[in-house]
Length: 135
Image 1 (cartoon, rainbow, N blue to C red):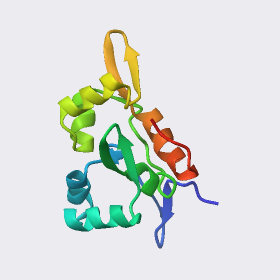
Image 2: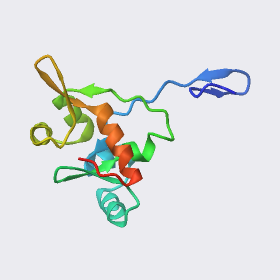
Image 3: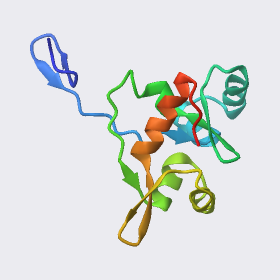
């Protein structure tokens, strides 16, 4: 059996690099830019339950981790600064800070820095599929 990160080409094996996903959750407009779907299509699919949604406080985000984490062997960055998470998810940095302050986003302290705990957020996004509540 071939390792997961390789695929067979006619005469030789080509190594495929691991896929790095910027964020396990995204705003509708960020997901729109990444997927090519229009925002109205995304909103409709979220309302119908065809796309998974993840709530961070009162914010409804597309649960990208639930869509892709199991099928692809994605390598998340385990922790991110607030501004890096904001860029990756499509949120504003002030929104990220507010959700961290309210305890709606998992965080980790590294010295005096407060970082978004992306690895824990992925676990929460995946747990949502099993019917358990997330934050």
